[in-house]
Image 1 (cartoon, rainbow, N blue to C red):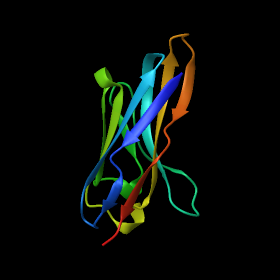
Image 2 (cartoon, one colour; image 1 turned 180 degrees about the vertical axis):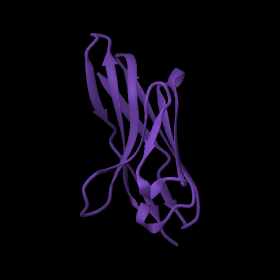
Image 3 (spheres, rainbow, N blue to C red; image 1 turned 90 degrees about the horizontal axis):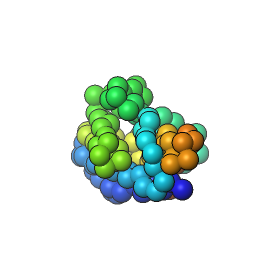
Amino acid sequence: QVQLVESGGGLVQPGGSLRLSCAASGSIFSIGDMGWYRQAPGKQRELVARIASLGSTNYADSVKGRFTISRDSAKNTVYLQMNNVKPEDTAVYFCNTDVRTTNLRWGNYWGQGTQVTVSS
């Protein structure tokens, strides 16, 4: 019913920048919170940043001041601007979204993930 398609991952050098995008499509009535999570090898999935429908944001301490989450509600898209990346930012990044579908039921959806590798 709802699909999340991420893009923008890849290889970046330490100190560089990368911008992730996640577009939601399908039987969407409205979208609530949108967010990014990441999972490094051998570690649990963790919150990177979330943005509410009215724009309030929260970030993991490890990315504050470096990453910025934003959304374009008209395009059902959430972005993650990653600046001054570090090797420890290497992980698979997942988009996560609360969606009210056209049958007026809320659900929580995940994207397939996009790999971000920070290495020189």
